[in-house]
Length: 163
Ligand code: GDP
Ligand code: MG
Image 1 (cartoon, helix red, strand yellow):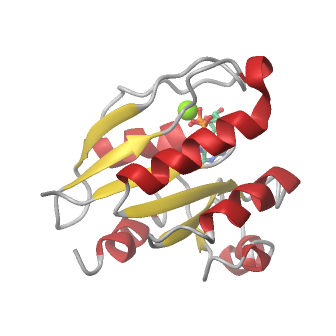
Image 2 (image 1 turned 90 degrees about the vertical axis):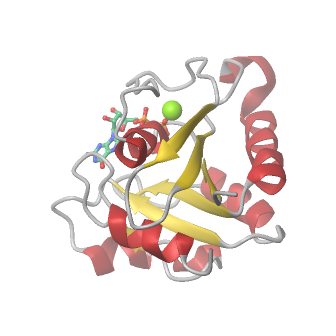
C-alpha cells in the first residue's frame, strides 16, 4: 500500500498548486477565487524516491453555505480517516490567521504525523516566514513555494520518512 498524504488548510493557501506540483498534473483546479466549489482530488505522487498518493481537500460546498468551520471540520475528519501523513498548508505572505489556529487545534489531536508547509515563500527569508508558525505547536514549519517548486521535495521526503 502506498502511503497517503493529505493536504489540508484554509482556502487560497496553495493546496491545489502543491497537489499539481506533487502529481505533475494539471488535474486540480487552481483558482484565484476563494470559496469556489472544488472537489477533493486524488493523485499519484511523482516526486521523491517513494510512490505515494496525495489528496487535495478543496472543499465540496461553497464556503458561504455552511461556513468555514464546517469546511474545516470536514477536511480534518478526512485527514484523520485517510491520511498516513498530513501536510497543513499555510500562507507565508498572509502570516498566521485565526483560522489557521483553529485548524491546528484539531490537527494537534489527530493520531497522524502533521507537517506544516509555509507556502508562497519564494523570495522570502525562510527562517522569517517559518517563525510566525511555530506557535501552531505542530513542529518545525517548512518554508516552501508550491508555485516555484522550492522546498517541496524536502518536505515530501520528510513526510514519507518511515513509510
Ligand atoms: P487552494 O485554495 O489552497 O487550493 O489554493 P490554490 O492552489 O488555488 O492557490 C491559491 C492562489 O495562491 C493562486 O492564485 C495561486 O497561484 C497562488 N499560489 C499558490 N502557490 C503559490 C506560491 O508558491 N507562491 C505564490 N506567490 N503564490 C502561490
Ligand atoms: Mg484548491
